[in-house]
Each structure stands twice: as C-alpha cells, then as structure tokens.
Length: 251
Image 1 (tube, one colour):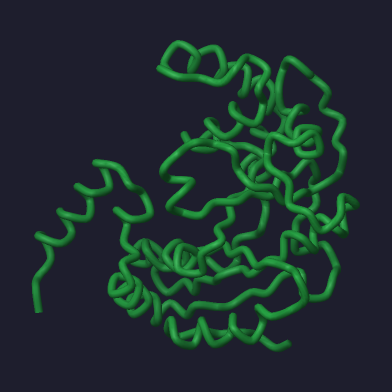
Image 2 (cartoon, helix red, strand yellow):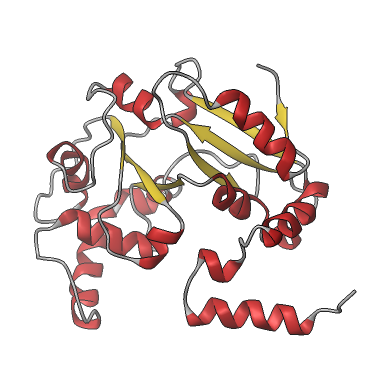
C-alpha cells in the first residue's frame, strides 16, 4: 500500500474503513503532531531516563506517596506506573486510543506550534502484535500476570533490569475519567525495539495529515464534539477552551 494521506475527516474515515475489516483484529490509533516521531515510549526517548528508570520510579514513589490522597498498594505495579504516566513521568507505556477521533485530535490540536510540519495517525492491530510476541490474540488487562512481567522490572522492589525484549498490548485498569473519555489503551515496552521494526503485514498503517489540513481537522472535530475539554475533562482545560473561545474573533 502506498503513502496514505487524509486532508479531512471524511477522507480519513474512508481510508480507515478500507483497512478496518480484516479478520478478528481490532484497530487502535495514535496521533502524532509530527509524522517523523517514532513509536517508542517516553522512557526510551532519552538514554539518561532509561538508564535511571528504577531510581526515578523509586524517587517518585517516595515523594508522591506523601502528596497523593489515594495511592495503590506498595507492590501494585500497574497502579503505580499508571499514575506515573498520568502525571508525565517517563515510563515504558505508550498511549493508544480506541477512538479515531481522539487520535485525530492529538495529531492536529497544537498545529500552530508545529509550523509547516505534517502530522500523522498510526493505525495498529494490538491482537496481531500479541500473537507475534507469543501470548496469542487476546489483549489482557494491565494487572494480568503476563503484563506484570514487563512492568515489574521498572521498580526498585524487583530491581531486575534484564529485559524480556517483549512488547505487549494491554488495556488499562486505572479508574480515571481521562482514561475513560480518551478510550485509552497501552503498549508496554520492555524492549529497545520500535514497533515500526516488527515486520508483519498489516500490523501498522500510517496516515499522513498535511500541515495545511490540520486547521480543517480541528474545525471538523469541534463539530463532532471533540475539543480539548472533552479530551481532558478537568477545570484547567475547560478554562483553556473558554479563553480561546472568548478571546478569538468571531466570524
């Protein structure tokens, strides 16, 4: 398949519609403001972060334990890594969404800070990945034993930095409104491999969103009820949206 390009939501949906019906594999999506960004989790984007993963998580645990009103059990690793991801600490989790519209938002929303940079939307078959990696087509929850094996090495209580060299897809267990509205899912990367390097037909598709089309996407998404306050359902982002609404010129 040649390079896929979508200039509006209608073209995007048409492309996805031609890809979606393929056996019993689900599709997940991920939007990038810059089409050159790779499919690697934040902990893998900086060698210093990666080398100090256990120390960083230990420090977070000690300091956040005081700051958090509610916190997971001491050894409940899925809960802790979800909190770390939620608050922006680099982790071995890579965010995905089950919503094409949510991915479209993330590929276009902040386009003014990325001048003349094309974005993209990745389409991904999580069941196919898990089958390739040896656990079958099933997509387990983050607190399952098979996913825990990939998460535990990030924590000082285990302290084993020997990689399993695996990447698995999983569903979150965090009870959080942002996870719910963004229809979140994750890949867990206990490997230095990139998803793009896994050679399997129809595992990944990349749809380019030209820079010139990003503003149109935002307008169309707004018509569909997809705005920043819907993606981030908190008072801070409600205020951001209201400032933008009342501060811009009305046509």
